[in-house]
Image 1 (cartoon, rainbow, N blue to C red):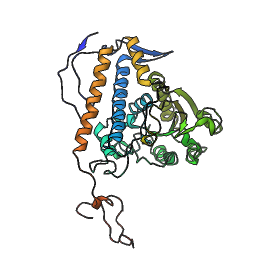
Image 2: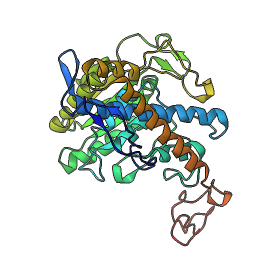
Image 3: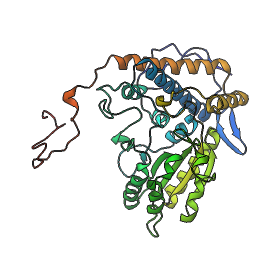
Image 4: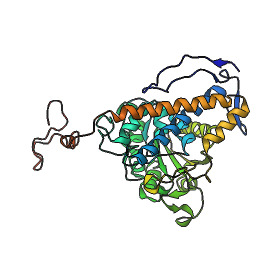
Length: 375
């Protein structure tokens, strides 16, 4: 396999990180990565793997920040990298109903990185800096909002995104085209009525909606084993009474999850109807920093599994894997260093962009908070 002999570059806070000498990676298309009858080209498989490695490096640095005092709280998705990256790479990002709307939750950093978000946007939320574009340092990590990509504000209240998703999908249905609405949540949240609301509103006769419902099932709800709260059957079975197409897939296998997301998206785009996809994933560091965020070595690691699959397929070697991981760690470290130089919010900023202009408001009369030149 030929070597990539790019010159050493400084860390790039706005991209995929530096490329170092000596990475031995197969030429695009030279390798095929396979699971059963499904395949990925070597080029695509390496793109997915690189983004998975970047996501893990960012998550691990976030855990370290929460333990060192650089951040107040951490929650994320180590173990969900395959699912998150494969989703992010297939979203049609843009602004308006012609593009995909995404209603994510707080374990989707990998989706955002795969869509093109720089690591520093995540670390700014971790450290609650005033430079945080999503909430100006007033919300905790993983609460993104990117209007130009149709990424709607993420809520801390679990599963409410499922009751909002039919709204954007309805706009897309009326607009026409192939835009769809993607909504993501965890298995435990499907006990909330919002999930059932989405199933119901997306299947009204004659008003079916292009909603891709994605449920990541790590078998836990914070500290509660799923088997103690419901019958141990696939979440995908919840689609049956609504006659929604559904599937359960191994969310730790990028080959399987890539094709499952592709099938689901094609159905939503072409048929303008919903699809429920359940991805079985791992939870490598518990629920959040509130539970210690210690590594659970009994859980399958999707990165280690995919790394071995790539090596076996001849798409990459161990030296190139190490270089890729080193690059990702350097990128994450650089993002934290830059973040910690930036200012924290001030008490005067607490209401900025919170209240809309309302001259008749008796509590905040004439409030024009957030408008240029006004407070």
